[in-house]
Image 1 (cartoon, rainbow, N blue to C red):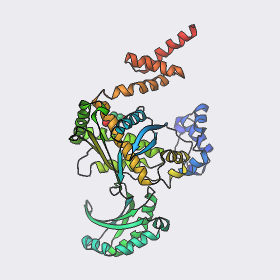
Image 2 (image 1 turned 30 degrees about the vertical axis):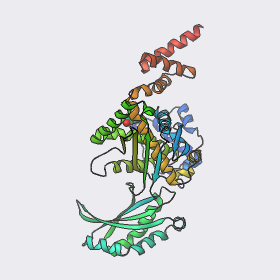
Image 3 (image 1 turned 60 degrees about the vertical axis):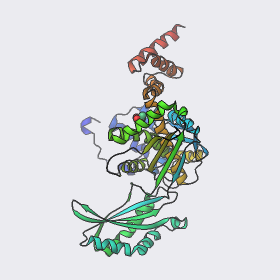
Length: 429
Ligand code: MEV
């Protein structure tokens, strides 16, 4: 097929088999047989399961799954599965988790699993009166919502409360109703969206307006996790390093350019566990960053200070909408295994572990930045990646990486030179 004929307009693509789709994509993109073979290679997430999970599947995509060790959270030991492409994150988490043990580990606590469903009501003449009318009909609206999910209600969950806010918009006032739903061990989007859709017509008739959006809010500020740790300064490398960590936090607190990177470091840990357990990391990301600027300026999600005894004290608070039932937490067999490795019994326990990992990951990053700088730790894994890119295999990877680290020159061209030299020497032997 020439470039001129190429089209991505393919009616009924979704009705084709995985193999048929793969053929079309291969032709479109000029994939080689080897590349097609790689796409055909399935692992624990098999083709039929993947094909049922999303639309238009042509394969699965793998990322490394590592285990962070040394985590002591609320007095319990955890092995933490992390799915991430970035070198050093798992090692850094394990290393910083070991440091927190000196102070008894990390402690974490979570609120109830309360999610917010938003219903947007427009075209209301008297929005403030309508607001009160909605609240006056609270019980009836909650009952309509709860009829949608008797299983959740039986588990002690369901719609628990209503809030109504008049907001000023560019198109005039709107009445926004919040349905507060206890989603128990689920992430909750499905349950909340179904309930929001179910109550919307009644809200429209109560208010005399029209409903538009009916959808969960990812600013899950009623589903928070808090994690904290208190560590003797020697555990992080001494008083000077501890002070450096606090100064790094103060920098982030005062400067959104730094706060974004500070929080990115936290999300390195958070996302890796969220993904490993089959949860929706976009939802968690959206919630985290919206929460970080809830006071109008973008702030770090964690705090670091030194107490009167000289201990380094860290804390983190963020929304964490994660589940252990439903969605990919169940359909992806690897997520099920990761949940088993974690051994968490409830969604709240999972959120607590993830909050603790976020805090520890932040500690690892700030400690490295305040002490030796981040590149020293990154160097060796980065060098290994470059060695692989240069074509090194097996033992060659470590050998090439070691030489580049020693030379402090981690570049693809240098990796290729070293590799060639190593191979020539081996041939001569
Ligand atoms: C890199 O993935 C994360 C860091 O940049 C976080 C930070 O700067 O705090 C090291």
